[in-house]
Length: 340
Image 1 (cartoon, helix red, strand yellow):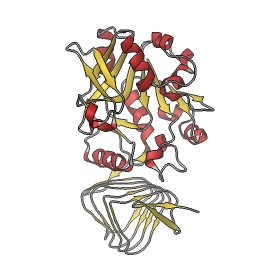
Image 2 (cartoon, one colour; image 1 turned 30 degrees about the horizontal axis):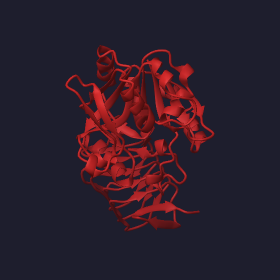
Image 3 (cartoon, helix red, strand yellow; image 1 turned 90 degrees about the horizontal axis):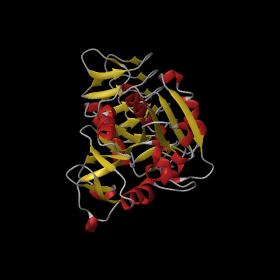
Image 4 (cartoon, rainbow, N blue to C red; image 1 turned 60 degrees about the vertical axis):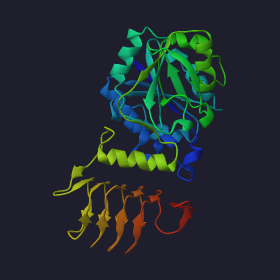
């Protein structure tokens, strides 16, 4: 079985974090969020992956390469102009020759892919949409099904007046290759174009209600919540690091941590970090690689990317610090990032 990962988005709702970083490369517990998607695919024995790229494609391709270091095989489809979600898939139609799955490069999920595929095949579906029950209905497409889980209506990002379901479209789909008959060449979208067409044609399309974790890392709030859920173990993902004795903290290699540092709650520290005297690291904090935190600083419920220097007696609460921030800082909506 093969997978298609949507990785072409610009990520405007995550700015300024995505001014110089593709959305799938946003670090979540010190790994690009898309790396967690690949980990989950591997857990379900899916190793042949196609990604579509548009915004800063070289950054993604340089990091993931051909997939060898992740024990998968990765191919790329670069788009000169955005083709839409379904249009980007159609461009890669020759890659798929059997049942396949589509996932978002900026989604965080531990979905049981094996169970979803079994459901799809049992229903003999042309297309299966993975749904999740959530509270914030208006930000996502909502879906309604009959008693046999066949989709009977779908609204992409409705207003409150048209909300009729607490199950939403996660952007995870399972398709048969026949689906390409219904996707024209050029710009085409799953939610706005393909699913309404399949409904109108009365094709066998079904909804699988997942029990695991899912969130769209679509804005700063969701990014911080996804990080918090990862630290709490609410989402089942791999977090790198070794446990520091008598703490709930994971640390990377080659770190120098003073004996006076206090750890409160669960946190993650990357590799090659220096943490000085009397520093306090409180619950919900993620510290990236090559970080220097000087004496007396307090870090709580904050995310610090790589190559950052934190001065003496600095207090960071519920902050997101972008990468390469040694001195000249700009502040935007509570976020710190480098403008050099």
